[in-house]
Amino acid sequence: EQTLHLFTEFWYNDGMYQANVDNDWSHAVCGISTDFDLGYNLSLTPGLYKQLSWDDSVDSSNETWVSLGMKYKF
Image (cartoon, rainbow, N blue to C red; front, side, top):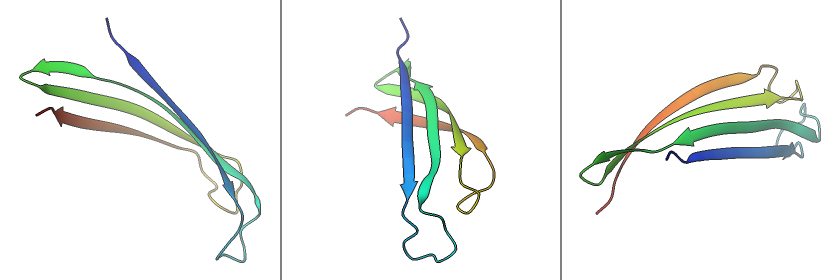
């Protein structure tokens, strides 16, 4: 049995501290990750994330990245 962790967040930018940024919904980030039990209280957590940019005044490109984490329980 493998548990998948789904992640999503939506960002609103109010333009504070930057004069050339629109006040609007700027982007969304979504992702998925899972834990692999390695034994000895260790787990490996790979993840895949995607950012969807909606407002070019904040960020004009969509981005994709991966992560790899390791946890030790004590």
